[in-house]
Image (cartoon, rainbow, N blue to C red):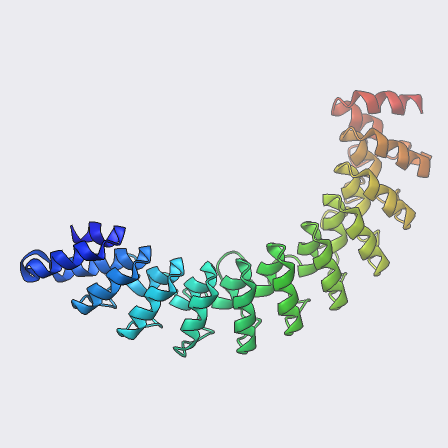
Length: 352
């Protein structure tokens, strides 16, 4: 019965049950479970009553979470205040190594976060996978908490190891297309050229079509180039069809003809993905339509086998000799179109 009362916030009912004969009907485990339920659901009056009756404020459940963790997850700052006043350990970690700071930073309750700041908790504390509160707040778009952490001088370049790559808070902000968070981090000195993953931050922003982030990173002197054979920001933008970003990058010095892993240029990628406007921009900016990849495939091959008739026409208008180029399999663009049943392109090429 006390768990039911705790869940629904019936403090009067709970008070009655506890006063009937607490030693007979309520064990320490009952109190602990009731406190867990009340904390999770934000019932501050019930929490206060249970604490006064001796409930263990730092008891852990099967997931290693205390009532304090559960209140942090939901942003119940009044409950947090009560728990702290009764000796809750603000630095306790759950089974994933997360503290209350991590959980509030993920949840986004600024009032709760300010309350935790008063406990002098470790603001740079790392979870089991090296995630900090700044990672959590940045990934989840909680600008006010990010600002509070940065104003306290936390480590801005901390890398986690939550996946295949070690990622910084700035990476998470760009991954989530969170302009305001990225701006805060860059203003506080986050490195725009740090490459914690297999692609640059600028390439990540370009891939997502985040024009404002691309502009911001370029203003902060993010590199538009990289090692030969890797995907450059221009490659990602061209493959995704973001013409404004393609233009921005070329105007800032990106080389239109630089090749990626398989020797493909931005023009190859735009052609095979059917991005007509990007193809036009690249050609206007001097991209060579005659470049071949590692298999001797031209952009025209790519457009032909993808049934991109408008791009086929544009490329041939730029260089009519492309129709005769053979790849490593001795296939011409006409062969490529026929093999992929691209009837319209086949007819068009035969007329040429």
